[in-house]
Image (cartoon, rainbow, N blue to C red; front, top):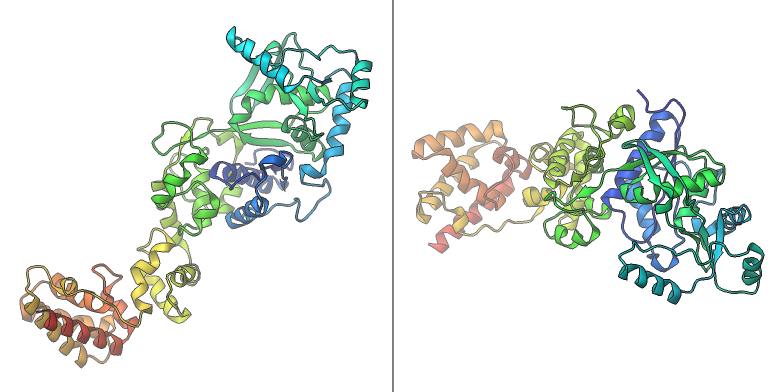
Length: 497
């Protein structure tokens, strides 16, 4: 059942001040799911009014990350739409218009307090153990006097005139009604001295003008939710449905996950940044599946979802406000499931870049042949060259020690290799059907275990102690190359002895 009977208009509104992280990706995903499920619109809006913190290239990276996850927006700065512009830095005059309306109606005021004055007030409040807040110096200035000072060019900001009496009750979709005493709400700055609006005003104006029906965002915005509700009400606007998501905890479950942990995670092959997941061998389908379930569930047993499944099944009512620990083991699990669900040709296409990154030259025909025998064995795509790189090397380089079977000497192992060479030379080809039965007969003749004989053969042919199924691998490599590698192994053992 859809969450809402009306088409939802939702926005993902990141600041281009860094990399797209898991928290932002999950917010965007929930926005997308709600929009698509209800036949609504998913809007990308760039909140770039904090000019000092902008990171060059961050906006483009955000878009690349969203597209990699499969989340294409319906309106945005690159494709336009009926409610643009979609960058806040291009909407300065719009915010100033609404700031002036609030001032004219006595719901906001010009503040001329200097940074030094504010710092002194803050210090005094801290000394007396009062929660730091604006002391109201300019709150009751005569409007005509304030306007004269503005026109004279005196530096100023615009502050919201928070009500001092009574309380405000705001409903959050996950937490129910939240009631706050108005006297505890500060007179927040709405417009900075440079004329650029802060989030508190800009986002509220944009959400109204862009007809946003649901605001899905992180729980870090809960403390200012009463302020944002007051701004809507002061302007006579209907509020959107507020949805504040759970926080992500560190993998240990202790403490909130932050960007600072990223450097340590990457050492272990993990990351909280979307830009890293592709290179680490994760499928976007798996990442989507994983982050969806960190804060939402369908039932108590279903865990595998495609994006289209999620569009069909997602509901706001199944969101969970409890903090969720980031579990990378679970990501590996989902990645394995989604890898195995890929058609062979698609799996082959996706592993190709990882072989190329490993300085190998994979041809498509061989990739298609090896895909079925490694698809069940990789948890991440970057494991493919490690498991199957030997298919694309001109030669493999096992050591003499690698070629010695457990319980056998070097000379005995060399003798096993010679017998194996003799058997394989007589085979029409080295497919499982042609080569495995006579090799198993050899195992019986030599009075050894299959593990001992095949260990030597595997090391000689693949250069690895662990490989995809041996005889299937040999068939792909081809008889001529298998014999060549086996002869080289015999020479290595003979010369080492």
